[in-house]
Structures are given as structure tokens and as C-alpha cells.
Length: 309
Image 1 (cartoon, one colour):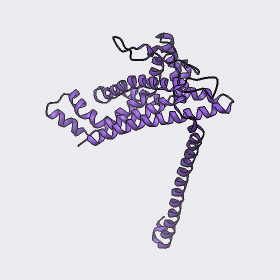
Image 2 (cartoon, one colour):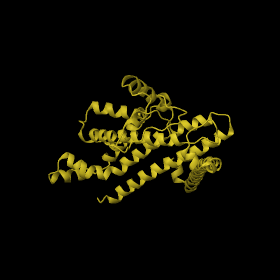
Image 3 (cartoon, rainbow, N blue to C red):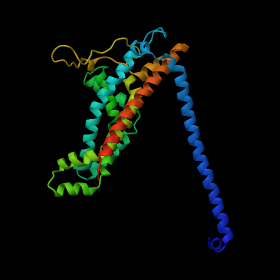
Image 4 (cartoon, rainbow, N blue to C red):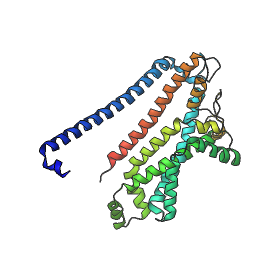
């Protein structure tokens, strides 16, 4: 090494070798990204070419049928929206509250370290495990049956670790000086959290919610495990009615299906017409996922724009 440093030609040669390797790895990374994007474009393009002609009012408002020409996704997209509504209602408040407690209130000891390790591990557990847990607890113990409530709570358990971890990381990123400044003017711990910590960390929290909801929208395995139907021709009871108390929760106990399961049912059939139906349903699921993400990203942008340090 000392001899190389004393020889300018050797130094120049070494720099040239490293420059060539740097250019090679830059090209390799660019090529890998290009292949990934090209594959994605081809897959989405094929999905659009096959399924887009089928997207019409009849397809959205027709229930499944044994005849591919008459089959639609009415019960599937309604079921997906209702299940995700329950999932968000359960998972977001619990996840954010748990993250706040663990980061701001829980004593720093070995118990907290143990909880942190387990929450991180739960974020990587296969979804089928949550389906088996929900089957034993929600279906057999609580007797909720194969219902929308069971499905929503199952997916809520699935995304809870993601939301908790995201909430903690977002809160941890807030400068300690903001807390000290709030305490200095007489604010309580909860006032500090509600008026300063939560508003400033909402962007990071919504990022975790986006990731969790996106995963829940496309999940199939846990819902199949708890008894989601692959063929259902009726809608659950409407949540609103024309007589007092005007709100009904009977839909929570209704059987259900969702778009991924409907797609799986069609893909498993040999007829080409059902494959086209599955492609059209895939487009709807893609648009639904992007729509939920876009709404969450917009809210995150608004929260971040309102932050003034």
C-alpha cells in the first residue's frame, strides 16, 4: 500500500479501475430498475388491454354468475369497501393509540424492549397465520361467524404492527425541543401530544396507514381461511334506513366476498371469458388501491404543508 501511494502512476491506475467498477454498478442498477419497470408496464398494459373493454355499468352493477357474459363484481367491490371500512375503523385508532403509549408513556425497561421485538416480528408474519388466529378467536370463540366484522378485524390485526411501528417512528422523529417548549409554558403531557406531537407526526403516521391499507386490500389468504365466499349474489343490508334510528349495523354480520377472491374464482376457471372478467376486476382493484393511496397521500401532504417548525 505504501509503494502504491508513492507511485503516481499506480494511484492513477487504481482510480481508473475503481471508476470503471463504479460505472459498471451504476449501469447494473439502472438496468435492473429498467427491467423491473418494463415488466410492470407490460403486465399492467396486458391487464388494461384485456380487461378495459369489459368495464361498463353492467359489469359494476351485476352480481357473479355462471355465465361469463352476465357476471359482474357488484358484491365483490361492495364487500371490499365494507371490509376495508371496518379494518380502518379498528386498526387506525388502536394502532396510533398503541404507538403513542409505547413511545410517550410506557416506562423504558426490558418489558418495553420485549414488546418492541414482538411487534416488529409480527409485521413480518405470513397473513395465513392471522387467518388461523381469527378463525379460532373470532369465529369459534366469539361466535361472530364468517362475517364482514370478522374479516375487518382479521385484516386490522394484520396491519396493526405496521401502523404501530410507523406511529412510533414518526413520533420519535419529532425534536425533543418541541416537547420541552410545551412543558415550559405549562402544557400537560397529553396537551403536548395532542397539540404538537400528533399534528407534526401525522405525515409519517399516514404513511404507515397507506402501506397497511394497501396490503389489506389485496389480501386473500386470511379471508379464505375465515370462510369468505367465492360466489355470493346478494348484498348485505344497507347501513342506512328510512326509519329511526336510521342506522343499521346488521351488515356487519353478513357473509361477504372481496375483489381478490372473486378474481381468484374466475382465474381458476378454464373458460377464456372468465379470464377476461378477472382482468377487468384486477383493473378495478388496482384503481381502488391507487384511489385509497392517493387520498391518504393528499392528507399527508396537507398535514406536512401545515407544519411550521
